[in-house]
Image (cartoon, rainbow, N blue to C red):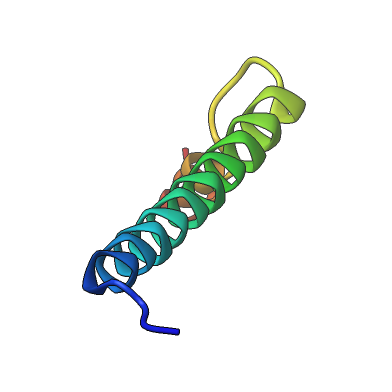
Length: 58
């Protein structure tokens, strides 16, 4: 049974598309985790800024 060359092109496109979608999902997950961290910190200056202020003696 002979396989059409278009099958390989379709499969390559599908593989590339699935890899791209996985990257997008990973990116969205990381972004959501970072937003969650920011929301958990609550209002006020970021901890990095507080440490810098303490180091400067403010």
